[in-house]
Structures are given as C-alpha cells and as structure tokens.
Length: 189
Image (cartoon, rainbow, N blue to C red; front, top):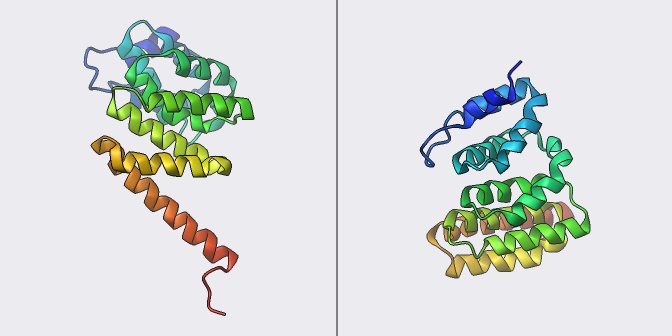
C-alpha cells in the first residue's frame, strides 16, 4: 500500500509547465481509491507545484468517477473561493460542475466562476466559461445567462475564450436541433 508521503513524491517537481507524474498517480488512484483523501489534502500544499499537480490528478481522476467528489464538496467550494493560484482555479473550474449542488451551492459556484472570468489568466477565464456551460447542462435555468456570457466571450474574450465560445455555441446549436427533432418541431405538416 502506498503511503501519503509517496503520493507527494508523484507530485513534486520544479517546472510549473509540467504535470510530472500526475497521470501515473491517477492510474494508482484507480486501483487504490482510498488514497483520494490524501490527494485532496495536497490541494492546500504550500508548494504551488504540488497543489497544481494534485488538482490536475483530481480533475483527471474524477472525469469518469465524479461521485467520489461529493465527500469533499465543502472543502472544494471553500478552496475555489479562497485560492489565488491560477492552476488551482482552472482545475477547480472543471471539477466544480461535477458536484451535486443545492440551489445555494449552485449560486455559490456561479459566483466563483463569474469571479474567475475576471482573472488575469486566459486559461482560468476559458475554464470558467466551460465550467459555467457544464453547469447549464445540468441546470437548464442557467442556459440563457450562460449563452449570453458565451456570446460576450465570442466578441470580447481572449483568443482562447473566443475559440471555446465558438465550440460551446456550436454545441448549443446541436443540442437545440436535437431537442427540436425530438419534439417534432421543424417537420413539415
């Protein structure tokens, strides 16, 4: 069994542009899910590289296993509100929509992601936009607000935001056509 100190060894390094061994850690987590609390603790590591790689591993691991996040919901919401580290922000923007949220928690996450849209990092802004869109898939009442934000990003966002906005608008259009076809709209009478 891997010890917590060994988890840290997967996350260490000097280069912020590298994910280090976080992919190997994700593979290990798939075999040993009991290590997840130790990984989550590293999100608060004073070494920003450790925290960044822990967030990367958490985001990747929970793509297919989002249910494991629920037990850490309060901690993740708090971290999302307090962190100033851009790498944590962009990973959390991807992770937060995977949580089952109450109405008040949904408002809290939307406030966080809206704040992230003002971050100096284009990547944080782009992931925040994607996170909001992901939330709107589960919470259709958000769709008009998100569609407006996506259109604003398309016209005034960074290059990365404009590219993501085009992708999201295309996805919205496909979903709209699918819904119309399913309801029988658009058919000749």
